Image (cartoon, rainbow, N blue to C red; front, side):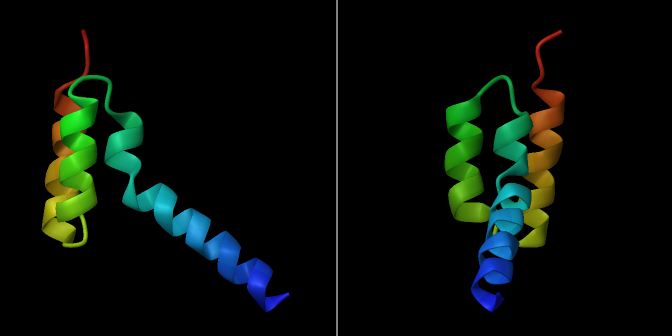
Length: 58
């Protein structure tokens, strides 16, 4: 049971960690690479989230 909870928690963590990449519609490759290397800091993750929202197609 503990391994199932650990796996579920890991999936939720990865979803939240890569949320800027998931919601990005433009510059996805750039946002993915920056997300991969900079999102471990909250400021980097927040900046990427803002970037993902502001680069949306209109």
